[in-house]
Image 1 (cartoon, rainbow, N blue to C red):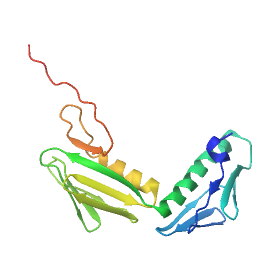
Image 2: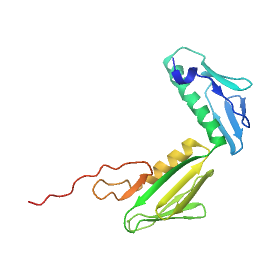
Image 3: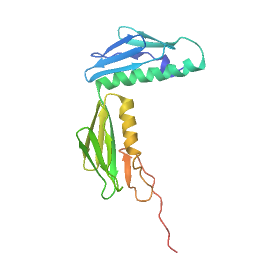
Image 4: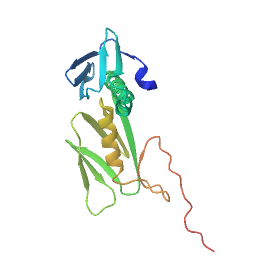
Length: 177
């Protein structure tokens, strides 16, 4: 039994939820999100609540139950207030800027690194802080993780890209005798 899946999901005012076939859509003041779900989980939409029940009692359906409930909660929260993640770029000569639909990074390589910004995301780069925001939690997280993976923080000097709330455990350098 899924603790997350058993809880009913409350639909707040100003949010409209629809299901047609396997396509589930949530629209609110910030935008519309669509996602396709498998038919292993029955989604019952009421007046102000959503309930999920597995159709079969096998391990696969049980595992999808809580996952789908979390996806629906994240979609409802995203159309009300956008998700935001911030990356801090530390290091001498490391720069970031947004030009049109691209994020240009100077990360100490012999060439500039350019990443295309996915549609639906807003990216701003001021000084050494890159802010990524959007209504889709999964898209915000995956783009931010992909950008961070370009230059992960190293433990000796702390150079690289880290999340705003991330703490880097520093190591001691060489010891001289």
